[in-house]
Length: 281
Length: 280
Image (cartoon, rainbow over all chains, first blue to last red; front, side, top):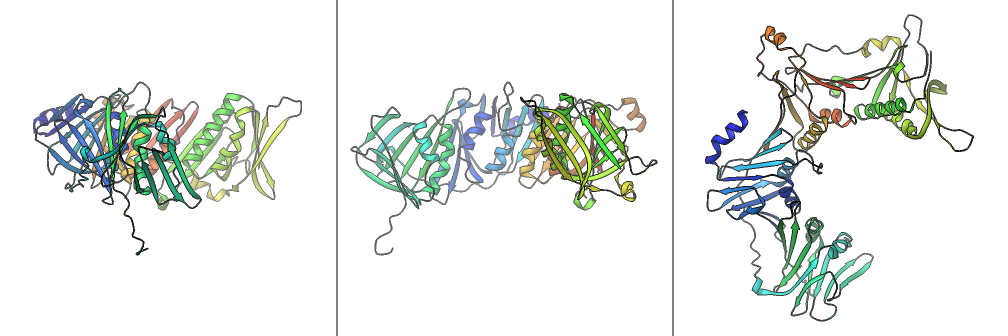
């Protein structure tokens, strides 16, 4: 097969080579952050981080550790490139988005370096698809400077506890208000929509609550349109960690278990909605 | 001009329903040709609309227990009517639990194809659902435009891969590009390719086999590795693939280099030919 020999000959010239027996272990994680067309990819020997941003206010990161791949080689310190995520996902799911029992799509992904396209070789049942996706100039990504030392409040919930709440958010409300407090109401989600206000309280001793570390009462508002995309990660995840720091920045960390039982993380950062002073409104 | 036919066998009825569903997916309006031996569903699109052609043929005796027809004259013993294909498939929706199906040509203020479905019922009284599908009777002088398309001598003939795999590939490719190159050679290889400024995607199918004899092609002086290719509208190809609900007994793809791709399918005892011309 000329295709395969071509690939093997060129193997040394690639800065990144990664193979995966089940492409869905990658595509599922990427779908969790697919709310914009473009993504920036960073690869190091530890794995790949894919970042998507919107409006300079929200950032989503998917971490795919090297261990998820059956083979993972990075020949440089680090690699950065920007790619069209929509196209990448279409390519990864070329043999169908829903899994057919008993068939797996294998993937081999190669990247030669700056200015070169990302090559994908996908195989299912003897049928091979080769994709050559052009990469773009990487753009600087936001640094939210979210330090665990500055974290004021932290809650770990089983995702099912948040899933329903997020899928039924009152989208006529401009903001989602999150209250975290060592005292009642402990953890509260509020919306203020056309049909009135809604408050959803989670008791501290609920079965869904895996950890509760709240030191100080914080009430912060986040644009609902910025948080809504994180629902994609929420539905895939088993646990979610909700943290806020001293500036009111929000971090949502989703733990996602793939079909082989391995764990990956997807993280959303969101900045709080600016308070508009009374005099200006 | 008369036509009256009946199906009583459940298997035949289901098969006929599946065929009409497929036709509805492939063509918005189609021509139904009724002749003493055969039924044909025909689509011969104008070049301006993409120039896709479809020719579906079934032997009436394989389906109908009763079949009576009288064409427009003794020497032209045929009937051509035009109908919206979805109307027929919708009328046949109720056949799932039916005892019998009757189709006849009627005139109820306007010409109709009347489809009556007799349903099973627990009580002795029978229940019949009747649909009157408006049709346009095609006059004799236009028949010449509705004849079976001639199959041009193809450069490469190859058996198609599993249509389901092909469909999911083409579905994803459609998200990226508007046109697609289909290429194949006599060595059993078939490729689907798209190319945009963002991405190039090629899916390689191999070991597909060809009905052409190697000696035949050798006499034509064709190298077995040499590809014949056609660039076509991806939507037309997807429409054809989406219409296939059952795995065909035989599925053949004939390519005339840079001119046309011809799909020739055998679905049990129904033959379907679908032609997609090259984009100019």
